[in-house]
Image (tube, rainbow, N blue to C red; front, side, top):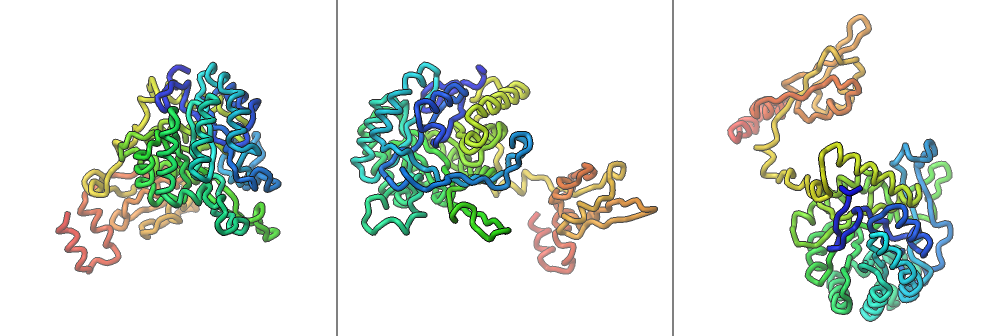
Length: 437
């Protein structure tokens, strides 16, 4: 698949698809299987000195809303909870045993092997990074997210060094920037920083700070903490709160990828969290990502799911005439409107029913929040009628209509403004609004 070839961190890779850090990349045998499955990038399972996660908890996975038909492939909106955070090996041992044992295989198969680890003190971070570089990793990922220590306050003693791990460490931007700069001074291979979703509200500042400290890329994001309840038993799924990923996270990831991309800091982005199917990967690339991480879907469907994803991406690019990943990367950014542009560049519309297609189901009536729809019935046959004067042009009715019987037509800005005030025709605000057009 020549058109999928690209570069990440200035390294040529056969495609931008990355396998996320986890149990699928925790041993030599599994990493070789991942490479054979076709991933252009493999993130090794996080290794840390946080020994609680080396052993516990038991029963690590919980699927919610999972459908068994078609091997689960036909229904991608399930929720995945996990507590399988870290390798049983510490970073030094993992680098020497696992990374060193598979790095040559990765290079021979044109796969970028990224060593992912977490530590507490600056010396631990530096020593681990040096070992991963010696072992042959093509890049390292500083995991400022997993383990999710912020959820383990009941087992961490005051003053315990482990309190500086993962997402707890990430809450201190000065600390992560300092660690990143010290690791940058100690190694020559690229550095990726894995950022937790708890930093979404200050993501642009966080990325800028890490870039200044020497990071070459960021990963947006790892999993959130979340919870579901079995209503039949009133029991939490698992033990309570756990790391969770759903396809619903895709919108958040896309938003933040775009925001960081628009800053044009030069830092590269690996987009993850919420990615389930090939079209999700294309969206992330069009939002500005350089690489796309598949995680939960690969765990549930197996690492070979990469072949299905890559085939879908390749077929789409061929159909649309995209000759390379660069042709579609950041394609959506130039079409994003600023708030100040909406008035002049978004056309006012109104909904019009096509009587030849309307089946009288009433879905437009159900969804209209402007009270613009009424249903007319004659001889048992229904027909939707939409008041042009009341219609706001929000377009929701046209999107829920199962018969595709509603068309959106352009109209004047004055008519749109009047529709806004259809229930308040005597309001002095109407006269003011019309003057502002």
